[in-house]
Length: 455
Ligand code: ADP
Ligand code: F6P
Image (cartoon, rainbow, N blue to C red):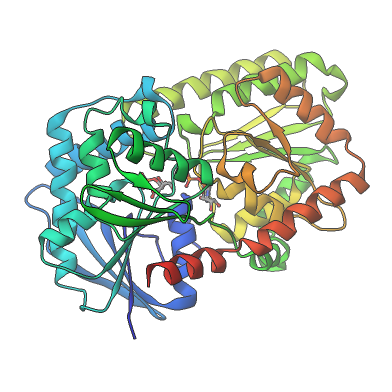
């Protein structure tokens, strides 16, 4: 029976109770738990010498985890440089934050080759290789150069932007050519898949047919849409579990009956945290009857803190949080709580359940699992309201949320006021619709459909 070999830059801490910030780690871990297989990636360690050989990290249940350490030079060029300084902002339409350096692109390809050579020692000829995300766009090309003929698929967790945006990256053609080395390319939404097919047809002189098969660079590749989901019942179960209520009950007591607006994100400029803070300020300006009567809590664990754009956004948010609280706080009320820390998943789900409003307003996001987790955590008899950016992949499925444009701060403020006043009947109706879609597009369905198409 073919084994599933999952490859991603980051592998999750698979010890229960450790925070797992990032949709990839959360999604892949859940998917592998059910099916078993090998998971290979970077250990998170940096060595001052050469990259380490691949080593067995541990085996937990049916998952065997292999990792390698990156050299400082590779980490700088691949992770800090091309993956997170160039590709991440470009894929999220934030071209103003993107830098470009050919030497970093070389480093990116070098690490893809390093991963491929390490994998070549682990895989058997009939294994299926499932690569994840923007760090590994060149992996299949490198695996084929290493002589492997396995089935290879890539799932892109981020958006794929309009061709004109992608082409701001001077290495665009080399990247698309390398992506065509996979047998299957999976995207979060039809918009992403279409943008990729548009590039292939208009820029690479390739072909795209209605069944999602594209031809380019001498290869035939299947493309498909596989929206990543969550285990709906598990999330609700964790949200309610008495053992996990420690933080939630402290939060509940501290609110003294005030409704809570909650946001949870990695501290990333693509998440739209700064415009969100401004929108909350606008809300306090325009709807003064909420003064003293509502609390907004932003949970944002620092992410990629050795990249300057991430340090900048962190400084900017600290300043905004201080300014907004300074402007509106009363002796007995602090409108905005800003927490720079992660929570174990089991502690996070009950926090979602405490919130009357889930505020999820990325400027762009491949999917946004927080939006889905928030909906799944709600009490179906008295659910909270999801306020969701039209630019999150999740908005394609969760259209019963209050959909907002995150660049329109006044519009977001109005949606918050509407959410807080929404009658129970309407809340239930919207929640029921979203839950039904999420059950159809569950995490199991995501994995099973991708694996079926790959095999
Ligand atoms: P991204 O993958 O860009 O970080 P997603 O919203 O898709 O965005 O996924 C984030 C995942 O990380 C979710 O599963 C969420 O539960 C988890 N997460 C986000 N913030 C925290 C936090 N403060 N503590 C623990 N987990 C977090
Ligand atoms: O889900 C998006 C993602 O970029 C993952 O690929 C990544 O593992 C996660 O967020 C966290 O980012 P990082 O691995 O850079 O800490």
